[in-house]
Image 1 (cartoon, one colour):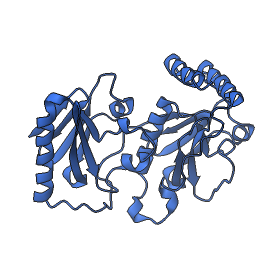
Image 2: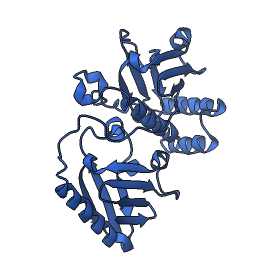
Image 3: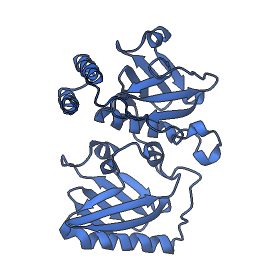
Image 4: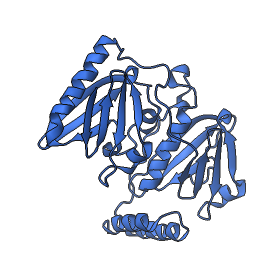
Length: 292
């Protein structure tokens, strides 16, 4: 048994399973804490490394392509510090970290685990149900049904279309574009037999995203939960089953005072409507004010 226990979390390896438990202090990203304990089977691992630093170092786990739905869903869309497969090592635990690395590497050789891609997910998705609070509505997934409810900030076209409700059988893919600068992101659901060419704010199958921390966390979990229930990428050639296609929108108008004032008004509306907590409202408002 090899174990590394530090403030950032605990990694334990028993020869077959690498258990990852995030720390509970405030420095640990909330997304990692929401994911909770993760049991990574050895067959899902492609490599592990310890990267020394000035005051300790970092453990970094690499998974085989296609083994983990969370990695598939969030690649390039979350901060590196929110990655559950990294662990910050305290200076007095470097020896334990190096020992764990050696144990995992030896097991990979002994068990002859291939480094190539997987044809099925080897890790489960997050617990359900899940709800994403977006800028113009909320999206909920219970394992079978996806529901979108609009709030008062939705455009008239979405309100006229009414609440949306569809199953995984209707879904052929997802498109998650994070926000960039003052440009909103979106979560678009591609449905079988229904292809909207409308902009995200008018598309009834698309939730506008502001990029708040809570919104990003829940979006990451919801997309992961859907991905693990869709056909594995290796089983289909449909590009819409992947989140690789569209890059984030280029930031526009970051220094435009009118755009900043508009975003501040929208922020106040979201806070008053209960979409944002007092803490989220304060932090985001301060970040916007610093742009002036």
